[in-house]
Structures are given as structure tokens and as C-alpha cells.
Length: 312
Image (cartoon, rainbow, N blue to C red; front, side, top):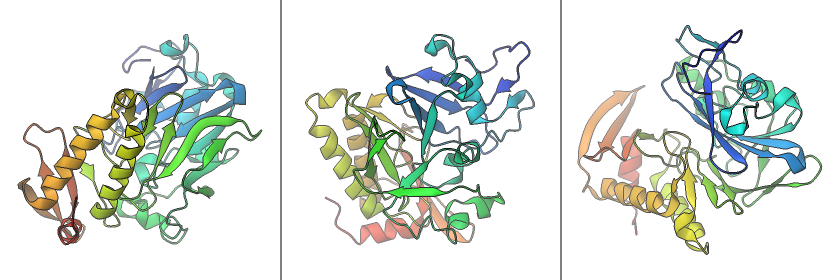
């Protein structure tokens, strides 16, 4: 469904959906109050009678008075999608859900509660303290924005965890721990469809924003691992990358390598500083390529720390 479509006897949804592959759809929350426009990925596996959702967006929060349908779950279960033969992705909620959070930032978790009542919510076990109940309100950035943190039980899974349905059938996705943007960042790898889902590790056109808990040296290590994964594929040039914002169905190797080079230029000083400013009591810096494809906003400390480390 396209935004602005007239819905007879229905409310305008906060989401749009389109098909990416035979099994997977991209949902975009297109007019959220935070101007995040998060990308949400839905993989439908009828043989397992299960749908996997990567991230749940901003919970439908919007200033747009025309938007009435704000629940991601309701959208998935009731709104016809042209790319799905004109039917909802999970009509009537007949299939079960598995939800994976790429990381705990608010714009990826605020829609999770309607799923948490009857579905597992998976997250990275790389840094349990980062997502612990005492640290979650701060690290999700809910506290800083005056938001109520969503209530749900998070199941932490290890690196290379193979996701299965409740009946033990494969969902065709492997969890990869990809810290750097945040300690709990993860990616999903779909070997059959040659699709890599990387959350907020990187994306194009919008600023890549690192929080205080991020690390550029760790990020470089993660990018190198992702590049190596893609390079080992027989048809590596046709592996596609899909991100938490702005970027979907793009050549993975080219995006990973080009973004890595931009970050190298930031750390080396070759990329000029665009802005230095105080945000929430922390000095932050902004770098942006002249053509605008890649940009970075982060605490200044992260760049200074990275400059003290060798970047290959």
C-alpha cells in the first residue's frame, strides 16, 4: 500500500510494505514523530507457520492527523499489500511471530509490546549488561526523549545462532553479533537469498549516528567481518545489504567497502569536520561527504579514541 492511498472504512496506516525477495518484505514507518523513518523487515516462512520480524519501529507515533492505524501488528494482520497478492502479510494472525531487535534503540523497539505477549523477542548476548533492566531505559535513549520504555522479555542469543520456529523448523536466518554502533548490535544473514540485514551498523544518505556507548575501532572490526562473509560467497557481487534506515537491496560489498573508506577518512583526518556542537552535555562532531552519501554524527570522544588505534 502506498502512503496517501484512500482507504474505504479503514484508517491510513503508519506503514507501507513492498516485497524485496520471494520471502521477505520491507515495511517503512513513513511519517514518525521522530523523523527516523525506520526500516522493518518481515520474512514469511509458511512451512514453519511463522513470520520473523526484524525491528518494530517507533510504535506508530506521528504528528500526521490522517494516520489512524499505528500498530505494526495490526498492519501486518489486516492491511492488504499489493506485492503479497493483495493480501495482508499475516492475514488474521494465523502464523506465529519471532521478533529480532537489531539493537535496543527506541526507534527499533517501540512497536514491540503487541508481539511480546505471545512471541519470543531475540537480541544479542554480546553485552548483557548493556540491555539489562537497569541500563535499558538509558541505553535505549527512551529516558533522554522522555519516553516510557516498552516492557518485554528479551531472549539473548549467541553469535551464529540459527533461528528456528517453535516447532524447530529453520527460519533460514543466522544471527551475527556486530557490535560497534552499539554493544548489542546484531545482523541477520540469509544464506539462501543472499541477503544481509545490518540494522544501524551503517546506511546511506542519512547520518550514521553513534551513541556514547559506541566504538569506532569495534565497528571497523565488525565491518571487516561482514566484508569477509560476503567475499566468501560464490556470487559475492550479488549479495544485497539491507539497513535500519534509508538503504535496502543494495550491493553489500560496495556499500560496506565504501562506508569503511569514509570512516577511515574520518579517523585519519582526511574527511574535514563539518560541525562540532554540544548535545545533552556531550561534545559531538559531524562529518559528511560532499556528495552526501555517507555521514557520521557521534561523540567527539569516539573519534579521538579511534585515532589512538591503528586502522588498517
